[in-house]
View 1 (tube, rainbow, N blue to C red):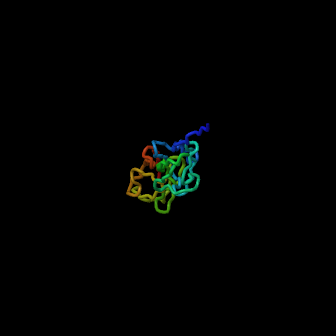
View 2 (cartoon, rainbow, N blue to C red):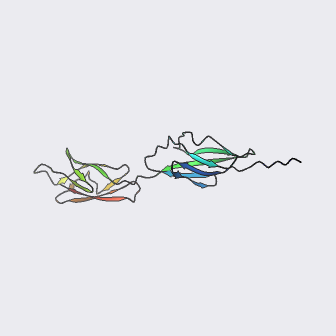
View 3 (cartoon, rainbow, N blue to C red):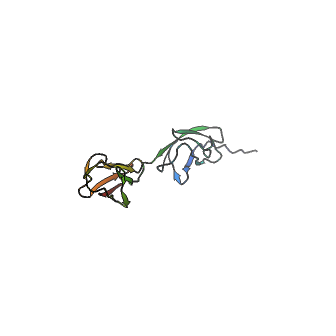
Length: 171
């Protein structure tokens, strides 16, 4: 008597990672959020699938995840299931000022304090040019006339909408 074991029909993706970031698996949909600044066009994944199954295309090969990418898992018995991997890039959580200028005069930045010395007789209502962290916003808007008779506070909000820093500008 010859006994043959049944071939596996398992077609699951058990885990999905890009580096140390793990995806959330819900049935045949995998979603993963990667840090701000990650290039979605050049990603290589590490996947764990059902024993005796194969996956195509190979997750370790570099792929463009700008749009969702489909992967087919084939069980030992030939059964197949299509899985979709969707990559999202997190919003920036940085709320920094990199440069603050009044015309050609550049402010000195020390932590959240900015100071600039302007020529005597310069008006106190000034417009400024500011370089912020990517995706960040600032309030009040520095490119309109603001009164700098005394130090003025500006709030920078990161692209994530929650991280905020208050900067004091002294002229």
